[in-house]
Amino acid sequence: MLFSSPFFLFLFLPLALLVVSAGRGRWQDFSLLAFSALFYFWGEPRFFFVALGSAVADYFIANIIYASHGTRKARHFLTLGIILNIGLLFGYKYLDFFITALNIPLAGLGVAPLGLWRVALPIGLSFIVFEKITYLVDIHRGRGAPAPSLGRYLLYVLLFPKLLAGPIIKYHDIADQLTSRRQSLDDFFIGGRRFLLGLIKKVLIADTLAEIADAVFGMPLHLLGFNQAWIGVLCFTFQIYFDFSAYSDMAIGLARMFGFRLLENFNMPYIAANFTEFWRRWHISLSTWIREYLYFPLGGNRGSTARTYFNLCLCFLLSGLWHGASYTFILWGAYHGVFMVCDKLFWLNVSKRLPRLVNVMLTFVFVMLGWIIFRAKTLPQMNDMIEAMLSPGRDGITLYMTSNVWLALGVAAMLSFLPCCGWYEALLNGWRSWRSARLVENWLLGALSLFALGKAVTVTFNPFLYFRF
Image (cartoon, rainbow, N blue to C red; front, side, top):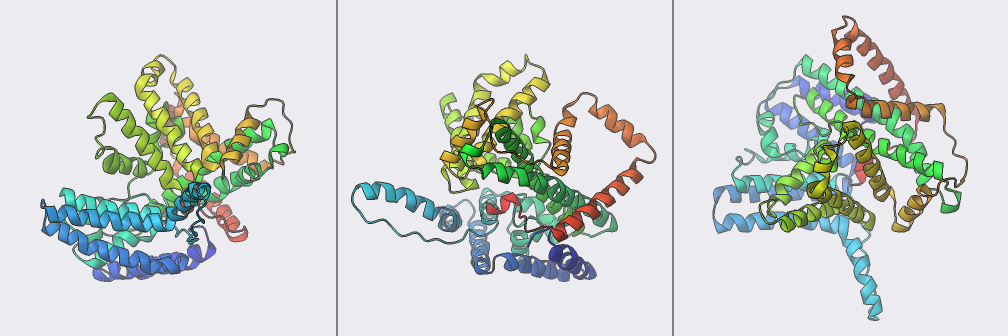
């Protein structure tokens, strides 16, 4: 069920708000859990009961870990819980990938190939599994007590605003809100504005840029020219940011409407001056998860320099694999890992001598080149795109760019880079001090929201990019 679909906008969400707001205490928890379960069941009926059973198992395993804290039994049950969750992720997301890779050497030995499972990847599986592992590890670390009831834990796992594509939320960050929260009109209006902002970014910017990005990445090599390749990659670079940050905006806004306050997931990533800063700004909940639950347990930077660089590369390699069972995702993770190591080796010191704008542009270009690896379905397609981008003067098929696409591209660039300008803060403060600024903002938000709603009702199915992860 898409946040931008007419069914969600005009039936599910109003009904959920009405029913949940009408009650207090346990009724709110029960009704919100029921709507969250329905939300996921609607999109993944075949996987729903598997996810539910896995969450129930986590709840009882966590209670055992908490009751036997500091003992070998606690470590054994933590290991069991992690294995069950990783096994779930491996079976649905990676098993066919590894079977395919294994069949290559088996064929060389004359052994019959192993059969593939060919099971569809459930929406949001990676995000669900990461949150469930976080819960178990934090209980083992003593960072908080387990959920007071199974229903409360299921609400944490299935809370529908963040269920399909994050942000990845730690239980102890939201535990108090699960047990005691208040819905207010202020929360409703603040959350509603944030939700509409995300809807505008998704429908009017990301989906518009997707038309060109999909067309370019779908072209055969002989039809792809130098200009088309660069425009296509630029469109995808802004598409993935505005698509994913739009989901985060809508998730945070929806949660606020129900009385929850989720942590931010993006902070203007394209104004980063290096890759280290980029990963502090991009998909913050994932980078935080990798740092706390993978990088630090591996030793972080507490060992030798070589071990620190190894830990970094391994974490980003696994981050790439987390995004999908494909060699392109693994290569994309390795690409970012290499740049993170380069930051620590020399670039952070070298970049101090350069103007920030130069650093931002250099980082953006290399991040954009990394998105080629991420977007390509195969390594040959990645090579084709890079070859076209490195061939100035090369002609290709005419790319029809409508005024809507140019407008979306210009707005995306402006919104992404304006905060990098020195005069931006002064301009923003001057705008906020204007007496009618709020009124103009509300009228503009309302007009764009109506336009986005109209487009959402009439256009074809456009899922969020991160649903496939």
